[in-house]
Amino acid sequence: MKVKKSDFGYTLENIKDAEQKSFMDNILGSMVEVVNKANEGLITKDDMEAQFNAINDKLKGYDAEKFAQIVKDNEELREMLKKSMEVIAKAQERGGSAAVDRISRLTEKLNEMYDSEKFKDFIEGHTRKSGVFTGFSMKDITPVSMTDDYTGSILITQQQNRVVSKYGPKKLHMRDVITSLAGDPAFPNLAYTEIESMDRNARYATENGRLSQSHIKVKENTVAVKRLGTYLPISKRMLKSRAYIQSWIVAMLPEAVYRAEDWNILFGDGNGENLDGIVNKNGVKSIESIITESVVSGSAGSVSAVAAYTLDASNNPNPGIVVSFTNPQPDIIDGMKITFANAVVNTGLNATFDVIKMNDRQILIPSLTLSGTETGVASMTFNVKNSGFQSIDEPNSYDAIKTAFAVMTYAEFKPTAIVLNPITVNMIEAEKDTLGRNLGLIVDNGGVKYIAGRPIIEYDGIPAGKYLLGDFSAAATALVDYTNLSLEWAEDVESKLTNQVILIAQEEIIFPIYNPWAFAYGDLATLKLAITKPSDYDFRVQPTATVGHTDGSNTVELSYTTKPLGAQVTWTSSDDTKATVSNGVVTGKSAGTVVITGSVSDGTNTYTDVCVVTVS
Image (cartoon, rainbow, N blue to C red; front, side, top):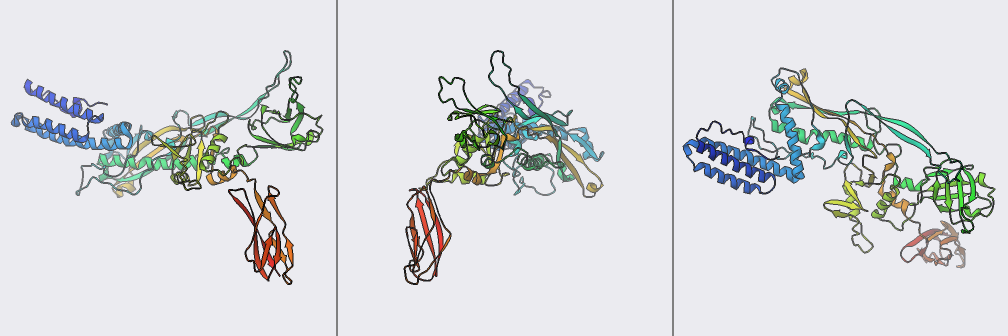
């Protein structure tokens, strides 16, 4: 918003002389131009001060007697504007022009409160409560520093314009990550419908054939409004300084409220007045559990039929096999891995296959041909897992997070970001290859850090080593501001005894998590282990053995296995004076205990096991 001449509080109506009136009108016009240029960033603070000095010199050179008071007023105005420019500059450093707008909106609401009759009556002691002041939407405010922002004028000692604290505000709150919506005060509860289960049983049919039936099962979920707030005792002397109260409210009050919001949004257990937080919400799992545990499994009787896929057998000699389930399986998704067991005639079914889903009751296995009528259908079982399990050789953090994004991209959901502790981000940025070179797993784009194509939200409310990822759009969850933060001043006998008043701050919010399945919370190191592909090499040897040594010819052959079969084994003894080893055969030399080590190598890594041998 641009400054106008009227904003300076000067009136030209009392100036009778036309020349003087025109002169002052030009002066005000010059001042308006300087301030507006400064606000728009077209001139610096130093340029602004220089131009005001030039304006003041003009005033001093024009009839000093008549304009002495005007010059004095202008000098005071210049100092006031100089301080205002410093505040604007600090705000722009923190958040650009938008930050200035947000501070202006808050200042407007605070001034409205200060100038209200009910607040004045409270200050004068005519009432015990100020009444409720609303409209303080803290989501529009960037918390400011508590340093160098005191400009109060009512002091009992010499006061520096400095307020210090080691308790700085957080740079980010969860409400900055999650979509915020305005609630309707007429409805303290929010209800939505959840589809509990479904059977999408669409199939081809002839012209006059009967279509197959599908069904869905739904339920209504309700989320109630939760009240959140706090109060602050404030000295009456402090109350008279608008600037100090403003600093207190902007820096401290939203921080207290938002910190309480943060942990509840993440870790609330839903008990009492706690929110139902994301991490503890039923349906939110870790990626490592999603890919390690069975998505769904079926016991004997869960398979209803095994048949050939014969749309056109004459043109397709290997049409594949269709496996039908007794009950609908909506949780099985294309690309997962399904393992069957207990097939009797078509024994090729007793293996693991990629899921090609025909509908919620049927899957296609194109690589098999039906050998004959399957007599073991009633005994067949199945187990379905995510295909990300043990899928990557020696994964790093990038591989783990990229896999997590892939696992969580299904149906309507797509992860929009990942939340990591700054320490975790630093650990990922420090990962190196075998030659000590930085891997560069995180990319900075315009001041925002990205990994695997998604932005990283650095937030210290997440423990180091943990991750939270998901779809943070309104489709998955939203923070509904049922009522914005409201302020109320009050006093009672206790506060009067200590010459204080109480500032009550409170808000009411509704936090529905519509789709908990769109979020995942887990441990990054555990996720890496879950996606690590088992090595094709391995070595195992019996743990203990005993051998004699009296005549130097006593030997024992150790039992061991290698992967792959027949891999070359390197053998060593911890003490050749007690026992030697060759091709797995240990020869005793003298009494004692010796450790025999065997190992195989894939050219890069060595796989080792030991046997403790007692020489008697």
